[in-house]
Image (cartoon, rainbow, N blue to C red):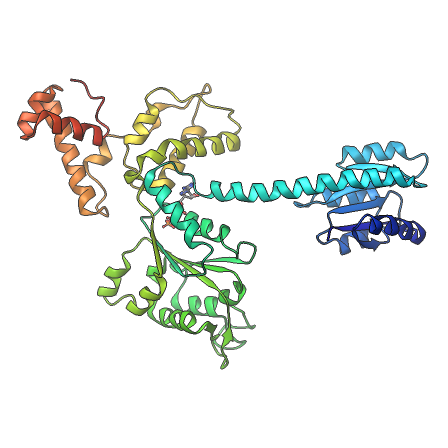
Length: 445
Ligand SMILES: Nc1ncnc2c1ncn2[C@@H]1O[C@H](COP(=O)(O)OP(=O)(O)OP(=O)(O)O)[C@@H](O)[C@H]1O
């Protein structure tokens, strides 16, 4: 039921208003001044407040309410002669006002309009939430669309998810998209980076500890598992987790309970685990650094985020997304992007993935001049592809090598494709295909 809060120091006025509002189908609470109202304010959709009250008056109450992110609709009550103040209140964001003594019709008309506005606002908030989900992951490519479908499918099912991918590909974003599309979206979302602290501290941080359990444990700590109870825990860089913590984590996953350090009794928790890593966990298992049983528990569903070079179709959209963000942040206004820039960005191999693209856009905007970004500051599209990072897989490195040979052959032949194809021992059609594949299609004949 829609809740309203009536704020007036006069109990008689509160009584009368309550009657009207309850007849209109509202659930009504009362407060006797501004301070009392702030203390009682919960999920009320509507606040009706008097202007003059002891301790905190209606104007101050309005100011404080409007400073909240999910502020309810506020309607002011004015006494004869205080219309001026009522108008000031509307400038501060009050929805409307009505006069004392009440005209029942006027009062109900104002309340009805106020509630319509509150409902509209709630709808907008929900819509914004859905839009947010779409905005969590910006993408345009086929591989990311496939991944997004999997994210939508797995999110509402309460299973453990393992997200892998090179550094900077957006694994945390994927984790966030899962949380937002899950029924746990309004519950705690706790993130923990396993690489950030020492094994001993990690154990206490995750599972909690009793007071005096070890030197420095001055008070009992609940631990992140209990903080995330009912919600989701992201274990980032899980490949860096030490053996003892792995064993404890496995027990939580199997038994649904944590054993705080220095406490005998386990505590039941209801936490969905999402784990992320840029490491190859199977490889770590074979090196004896990661428990195989834990790996299988974690990867009930395995989502792999492709590196940006394997989804160049995402580059223009991500570029626009970051450009908007940094134009706004640096107050530059819309910047012109000179011809050829996008092609170079798409052709570049982005060894640091989306994070590198984001940083590149940030510096392009920060260093823009005359309303334009400076193409001489772009990352060099030619160089990195000739030597892919050594962390890249065999396929990428072979491709990088191939691309380098083609560029060199074309250069030696002065750009003559037939001659270059002959030297490389491939047909002209194959060369043409490869030029397109490596974004060299525009090279001169
Ligand atoms: N699809 C995307 N849409 C919008 N922003 C993205 C997207 N993917 C990544 N980003 C941004 O790129 C940066 C790196 O992403 P994120 O931290 O999720 O990567 P990661 O794979 O978790 O990296 P690491 O392994 O280094 O922790 C962040 O600033 C993130 O907001």
